[in-house]
Amino acid sequence: MKAKILRELATLNFEVLAYTVNFYGCNTLDELVDKLSFAYTQEDVKRIPDDLQYSYDTREQ
Image: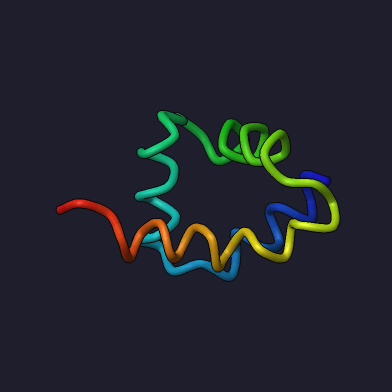
């Protein structure tokens, strides 16, 4: 499962990934993967990039 999530995170823009790590309060990418593995099922992993991009695009600035 971690490999699938990492594969999807690798498709993200760096700013989106950095925002997501900060938003979830993670210090490492591994911590973020652990948190996302609880939020998504194996069937939903493909939605991660779109969900995180949407979260980044609609954030309060």
